[in-house]
Image (cartoon, rainbow, N blue to C red; front, side, top):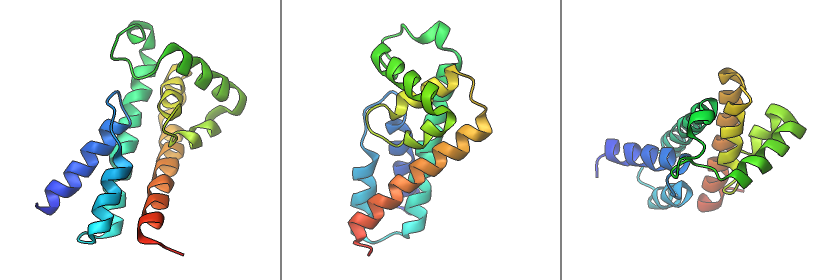
Length: 145
């Protein structure tokens, strides 16, 4: 497999994992890290960028929720949105540091769009959270001290 295929595939998997499709980007990253054939920093960058841009899709969906929330494919249930809205109301934009979580994290990114979080602060917080999650995966797989 070419380097482009590896990085592009990991980017796509991470992107999908942050949107409406069920995917486990951590497992893909872990498998590639365990192979040891590609630079860790490049794998982390591909996964982080893909997952962050996938969250931007959720943010954009949140901006247009009035027209989309009743669609079957919408990435968050009403219950998830309500729970995320409570978190967001309590903690504000800082709740986006929990956007890495497998349950509720995607809903937080949708709620950020609904509540009109500015894109620059959204990107900074979500990119930080998602990158740190992938660094933690790398630390576990590579047994960093």
